[in-house]
Length: 273
Figure (cartoon, rainbow, N blue to C red):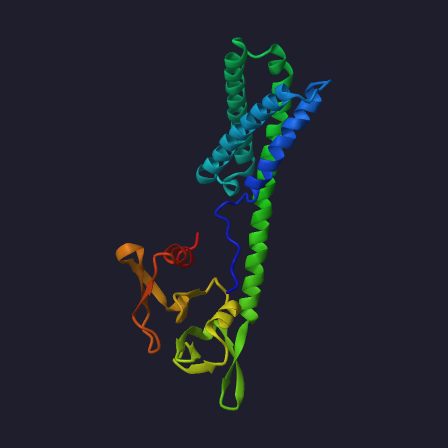
């Protein structure tokens, strides 16, 4: 079944991106900071520690951005959101970098971090937090645009879509909006019109499913696919299952079970954000 793009993480693929990007940033910082770099165990250890600090600061900034998504969305005030996000993430990220650097210095050397860490390194690191914010903001609006394009294509497909069914000597186009659902009976797949009329299909339910827009159709089990217009609601049953209430129809039962494994997908489909 065709599916609508939906991001529980509106910034994907940020995790994979920064897992790769942060070591590269650390390496570039070393290039900017040190004029002579010798490859030895001390360099490997310090580079690894700096990279781990970068991961910790990035993850804290990422968590802060997700927190803002719940409290102050971009759409509620773009400039305010970006300003708060930028200031908060820089303060939070630098605080973590400074705290971890001081801790490492005291453990390894028994003294505070060198002065040039505050006069040079912090300045360079703060620039990278501007870059991180730019990446997250760009990913957010790029994914929103991708979602919008996917919805537009899906809506166009639904308006002009349907599939062919046979009735006697006639081949008819059955619009998606006129399709109440489908079920398996013996060796046949039966498509049911909203007026109750049945059409026998010469395709498997799996193949028919691939042609249906997921926005409106849900596969309940191996035998049934229903249109949203037939679904009245649901109640929770034992072991995480759901019992879905079906609007009166001569072709479908008044209730239909949804397994525990399919229950989360059904809830997301039935009441999308």
